[in-house]
Length: 245
Image (cartoon, rainbow, N blue to C red; front, side, top):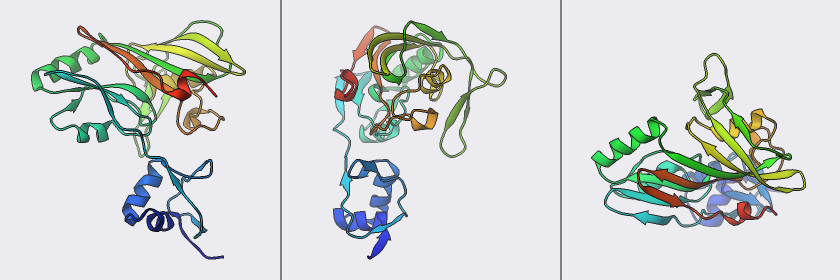
């Protein structure tokens, strides 16, 4: 049985360069059956048939002379969206696996004012997620978070070196041993929601990095609503979050 590196077989199959094939695998967009291909250099059967799940198109929710609100698909980097929209600059970021409302500014004066609002915690941010376990009542989590940015970013609770973080979790629905929750955050630490939920025994479904054992194409976390100045933006929940399974 002939074998070759996964990215080389993918490159031939999709008629793309080896580098493009590596990038697709690194971004978690390549599957064999239901299994995600995680190692671009893995030796596999050269007759393996891959499936590439390209992210859905970027949908602009609203645009004026100051701001663009985008419904970011999961598995797309926030900076890739910034690069795709000429003359726009990110006002904040969402994790690559998180979908939903993402805001970009269009002029320097507005960008500086908006970033100050985020910094001073005057922006309302509401998320929705499916989490492991049954959430019975509203929880407020205030544990400080420390982020280590060597290679792949990783955050953890650290009462001594961590920065202040606040997350409010409101249960909405239970299905078996999974719960849907509305989440409000006043701070914006890296992986804040994911770390805080994992710390109370309810990691976000699909979030293997922070302890979820449930297989999912991506983390079931969605930025549903943001209020900034007099603007209110909302992104409809994607299918996998609106209705789990």
